[in-house]
Image (tube, rainbow, N blue to C red; front, side):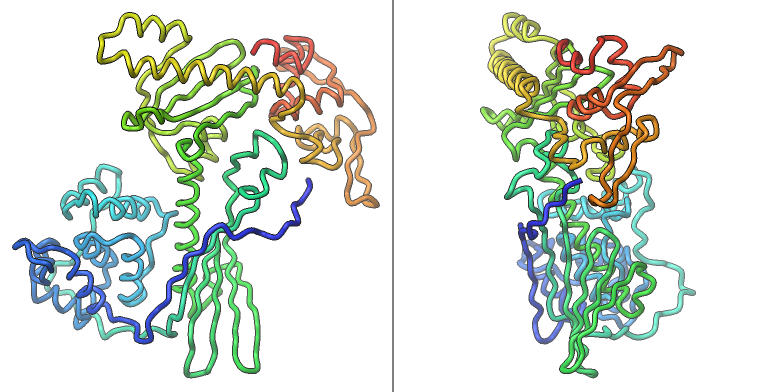
Amino acid sequence: MKINTTNDILLQKQTTEFPEEYPSFADFIKAKRKLELGSSGKKSITTRELAVRLDINYELFRKIINMNKPTKKRDCIIAICAALRLEPEETDEALGLYNFMPRLDTENPRDDLLIEILEGQFSTPLTIDQINQKLLRNGFPELDIIDHRTSVKPASGKKNMPYKLLKKQVSTFTNELFYGDQYDSLETEYDTFRYRCVADMWLDDKKNRIVYKLTSGTSGDYYLEKHSSDVFDVTVYKDLDETGDFKDYFLDLSSMAHRELKRMLTTLNDTKNYKERISAGIKDDAFYIFAETFNYLVPETGEYYLYEKIGSAVRLSVYKSSEFMHCSVSEQTYQMAFGKNKNELIAQYMSIEEIEQAVKNSKYYDSPLLRCRLKNFEHLTQLAASLKQDIIDRKKFVRRLDYIYEDKDRVCQFFSVDKDFQCVLDDEYGDMMTATIDHADFRLSDGSSIIITLQDLYDAFELGFNDIQEICRVKQRTGSVKAVLKSV
C-alpha cells in the first residue's frame, strides 16, 4: 500500500497557559461559585447553598472543599462540578486539583455519560437526583458522593503535586482534509482514522532544574522528554503502569486526546457539515449507492434525507440525525468511533411516486414539508445516477486499485486467495506480490464451482466487494462481476 510521505498538517491546536501560582481546589471552586446564581438571585451561590444542592452537611462540605477532611470519592468532586454547571474540561481541572483524582475518560461508558451530562448542564441543568436517575436508566450506579457512616476515618492531609504544571495543549493533525484522499476512493473519503490527536504537557521540576515534556495520543504510546542544561533524553512507554510518578499526568493527556478525537469524529458523523455526501459499495450481493443531505431550506425541521439504492430497489429515509456514516462503515467500526447512537426514523418512501401521491393527499400545512422531501428525493436520485455513470466510466472508484496497491496482485491477499492464485513475494522490489496463475476454481456453499480470474478480483476490489464468496455468488448469478452495476 502506498504511503503518503507529506508532512502532517496541523488542523487545530488548543493551548492552555497556567499562572505562576497554581490555584488550590478551594480557590478554584470559589471562583466558579461567583459565576453561578444562588437561590436568592444574587450573583454568587454560597457554599451553604452548594452543600444543599448536594445534600451534604454544611460543616462537612466546607471541610471537604478546604481539604481539611479530604474526600476519597471522585464522584463527590464530579457532583460539585455538575452543581456548578461546569464544563467537562473544568471538571477535569477540578479533579486534578483534588489530590490528582483520575480525569473523565471517554472510553469508560459511565464517564462518557457523565461528560454528556456535564456538557448539557449549562443549557439544561439537572439536579443531582435527576443525574442519578439518568445514570440508573442507563444501567450505571448513582453518584457516590458521601459516606454517611460515622465510623469513617478522615483522610490525612493534602497530597502535594509532584511537579508544577506549566502548559498543556491538544493538537489534531490530518493530511487528507487539505490535500484530499490519497487513495482517491469512495470507501476512504470519510475514513474514521483520518485524524491524529496528540496531547502535550510541560512540567517543571524546580528542585532538580528539569523540565519534562509529556506526550500521549489515542494509540496507547507515552513519550517523556527530559530537558535540563546538560541533558536531553527521550523515553517511550508502551504500558501506563511503567510511567511511575507520571502516570496521573499521562492519564490526563490520554483523556484530552480521546476527547479531542471524539469531538472531531462528531463533526465527521454529521452530514450537515458537508452539505451532502455520497458513496457506494456492495450490500446483499448487489451494488449499493447511498447519499445524504440535510433540510437546509428549513433547518428548524432537523430532517436528514438518506437515499439508498440497493440493486434496483430505492428508498428515501427521513431521520432526525445523520445516518451516512452508519451506511459507510461496519456496525463494529461505527460503535468504536461514534458509540451506540440511536437514530429516529421519521418517515420512509420507496419511490418518488409515493411522495408525489402523499403531496396530493396531504393537508395544506403538511404539503410544504412533503414537497421539500420530494425535491431532495429527486436531487439525490440524480446524484446517484451521476455517480453510477462515473463508476462505469472509471472516473470514480469505490476502491482505486492503482492508488491503494503498487502491486495490484495484492488483491489476492485482500480477498484471502493468495494461496489459490499461487502468489509469490519478490523482496528485490520491496516485497511485491505477484500471482503466478491467472485463474482459480472456487466452490460455493451449494456445492457448485466457478472460475474466478485475476481480472475478476481487480474489478471486484474496485467495485467494493469484501470477500471471495460474494464475488463467486455474483458471477454465478450474472456471469460477470461488473454486471452487478447493470441492475442499479
